[in-house]
Image: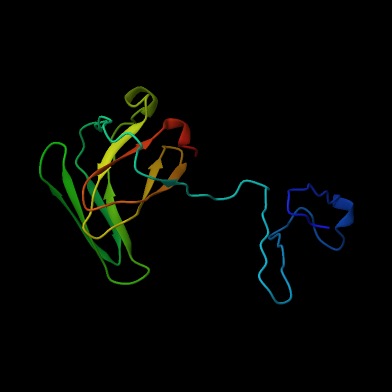
Length: 169
């Protein structure tokens, strides 16, 4: 019987009959019947995109990226960058459908070491007249990707802190 606090369950592989255990495609928990049901699941390595709220300390110094010409990427969207100074830019996006995507990319010709550049974490400032959240991705040279969702973006700049221990590939 399932309780309101976590219990561990063991399914021995010999209990699973009629399947090729070397070729499993899905594992499903199924609810049935009427009514509202909630199931808390503590299991496995799930794809997870954490949310990054504004930093508690808004006096943090922004950690400047190494010099780069910001690029753009897009699919079914128009994207452009406006560079206003050495440290301030605007990324403009116009998507043409719900499947559109695009944005700004800081791509380095040689690898950068976040441990050396930002040992105390990455601090940046964002604001927008019409965006309250945006996804960020950090990629390594082996194809690993870390993703997070930046939240609570406001019309005046807020600083965000990403600690290096938050970045998992």
